[in-house]
Length: 364
Image 1 (cartoon, one colour):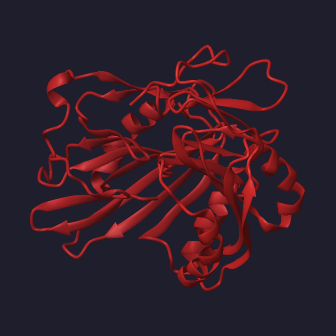
Image 2 (cartoon, rainbow, N blue to C red; image 1 turned 180 degrees about the horizontal axis):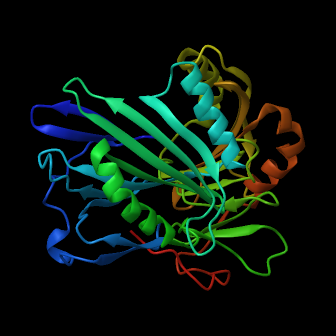
């Protein structure tokens, strides 16, 4: 889990994946929320709708992978409020994959705090869904004991993590409200910015803001990936904790010399990561008879052997990079579909063209 605490004289600061929290406790959305009861929260972008305790003001919303972060008052220590947060990530194949991973990290001493609970619970009718529950305990130098309760829930190709982080005496008081909010959550498909084109003979998707279409391998789908700097992110059904993926980047049109890059890129990549092996980097022609730089690299990512197959090419409006990252063991079987995906990429006229879907992703 990604929320960590550092206790200093001014109280409890929250460290989020995107840096030191820039919000101020007590200056959130409290003025726009009722003082008692429940207040609704909805994020179509992240595919979530729920009801939150009105006395838990929202400090931030829709920030990177954080769906929301709420402040929880602790009367016994008003200078150190607790936190209720929800974050989104790419889902593993099963919750058991994460349970095992958390357990092994704890056994190796790589877990934050003391792992107290790490169990999968079945869904409760009209209540909490199937979830991986973890509890970590932190004993602070000043004698305080804090607990972090997390519920990991898989919905489609995303995993939502609900986090309750409070002092141990507060946990018993607020856990029922935490569970009520999780049980009340309604999920929808997060907005990936792309839509599948209904009736197309292939697995064709359109990216609405940048106006292009591309054919993904069968079984793949575009999805929201807040931590990826990409205009389109897609993946295959997960296997274990990993899912083969593809992303597309766009940049202002430049004057890259692909022939020169083909000569220099292998050495540059190996200088950054000496363990990587560049199979080749070469200039090819696109279907529009334009140059593209095609590069294939084998890399190690923890216990995984990965192969990256990418193309850099120039469109009418942008320079693009289309990149697959797949397990090396399955690379050869997937290679024809990756090539078809690259060859299928096509920019649409700026006015939308006839393949425009029934729903457009909202523009930022």
